[in-house]
Image (tube, rainbow, N blue to C red; front, side, top):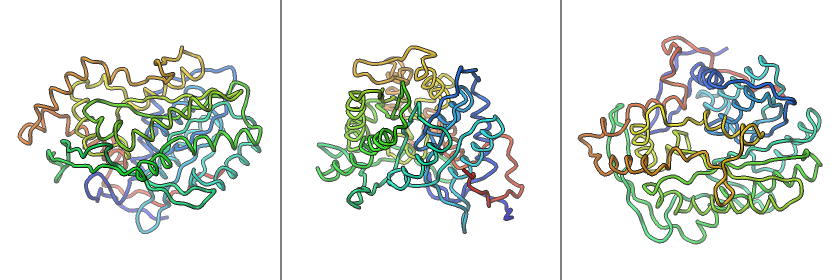
Length: 392
């Protein structure tokens, strides 16, 4: 037993410790926002990237709304000198919820890119559940080791064609600062490596592994989560090296759907504060302005994940665009919303950033990623740090 008082310590948007009780409360709060259904059968699902962001939201929405059984995969650090990562504690809390709700959902802590992980996960699936109905792929990683060659690929956050400088947001002692961030042009090699990390190759390998083990159920569906975003963030995101990887992900969906017995889609989600997105220059300011414009009308990852499951299961008709992508971001890209955000973007200065942007909300959301600033948690009390990973 190792109990101690945990305070937020870090630099920028990265914290060295996370708060177990805060992370647990985040999971409870997310589950409380989902209305349960009574499905005819409990589907079997794999969620790759189940401990944070949209992957976590999809896991919780599936557990509560449709009673999914299955396996979630993520790669988190155990407690040592520092606390465990926030995803470790969120996973423990999600597993506890699943058990209390009578769901049979296991969690594997391992590198999703590795063939050994696929073997471990599918051995568990074959033993406990049988064929899989849904595979949700939500992986954001800085690097990937190709299991066939041992080559390490590194993703690059760079532009394509020309350098780009954008407004961005930072914080000093909790006060917002308007800054500038400049990105260099990616080389062809950097673009190719980013595609190797964040494109559709590993998604395909998961589907291949399921097919080889005859673990694709009739009506099998798989979805990879992606993002398009605003023209304001386009040069850095969708038109940059990451965008090339996202385009490959979408092409992969079309290729996978050509196979018998596979329905593959990409789900275009809306903007949110996640550990991945907060690290991208300009995104934090954009999301702060978006929330200022929309307020409570800004759809959260859990709301979007409910919509995702409703469309995957046929509860509601899929909202597809002309390229066959599920669109969960129409609220964000509504022309009136984008026009309002653009007006705020042009108007923001260091003098007015605290009022033009919803900077306080954004700062609190970043802290919530690590279990801080969560209502109902006593941050002066000692809390248990040595939380075990859920047993399979």
